[in-house]
Length: 434
Ligand code: COA
Image (cartoon, rainbow, N blue to C red; front, top):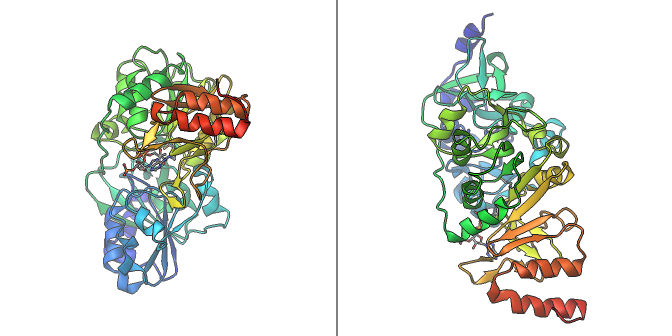
């Protein structure tokens, strides 16, 4: 049968599609900007027909209405990363959190830890061979669709067609719902003086010819501002955003010196504005792969001069990094932080950077602390940590004793907190700080 015939046969309405979900099913939804908004709205609208449906995902950019208290008999969310729309439910224990490295998520689905009953995804229109692209999120979205008992896809004609290992054939989709709506956009963040200072310090560590992983937000975007005079940078990153497009257009990011996927930018998901989405559409210089490839430290390390830049909540005087919880309050998740810290550390001439403002809560608390808050999860261990950067400078921790790490961190702490930190250091090491 031609793929066009298959396509026609599998076309259903959103209501018919969500009728295929059964009580007790585990439903994995497409990630971040590829969340299938219409299918999720329809599922929530028809909540009375379900009991105990488990909804699994990482970043959700939609409304996440299934986490509301009144949804409890029908849905329970299991977060693999906590975001703005799910944080309250997780911290009120109305939703669960499952710790996991981003690179391992496909294994959870494929190897029976979290078997997938239904994958609800969003894909591009099929090409002339019947292949749809997962577009902005290949990550765990493609692996989930590949191993789900049932795959239901929104085919959105506004989803960009990204290249790489990012396709699914129409014959692999059980039910198709045609949609046409603009992809969610994330506007570039405001960059203040403090972020600029952090960005400038990070940029000092980036040599010409480096391959970069950048997270999302004001700090990564500020780093990009200070890279305009660099040469032949490359991208191998779990995600990237609009700032990268600017540096490609400026001729700074060429990917020419990459030692893996030379000439290509590699990512597993993308978040930004329509400018980014237009840039990646049908662009063979951008390759998207599932996250068990892109974030695998053994793959990352094949990029010489790999530099990873991520952020955190607290660092203690031993260099233990808490990036996902404030005490017992789960704020986000590990995401790809440790995947890249390890991959960059193992790479030839690689560097991993954790960059953060020196204070939080409008300057009231230091992020460099004697002890992590009680209950905080250690995200990047003191054995893995390499560079810590604040607006006050750079602390290189690898190869340093606990005593010297403490000193290096105090030097880049906010001046208001240095006396307190020095006192703690003197008590701990029973000697004068000098
Ligand atoms: N004590 C008390 N409150 C703190 C705090 C601390 N040490 N550190 C942060 N906070 C508060 C902030 O004041 C802020 O509160 P507000 O929203 O009321 O202003 C809130 O927690 C968020 O902190 P902030 O640092 O502004 O968050 P962010 O949006 O810049 O994200 C991380 C920072 C660390 C949470 C984020 O980078 C992350 O989730 N990292 C882990 C995942 C990862 O690295 N993935 C790979 C890259 S995609």
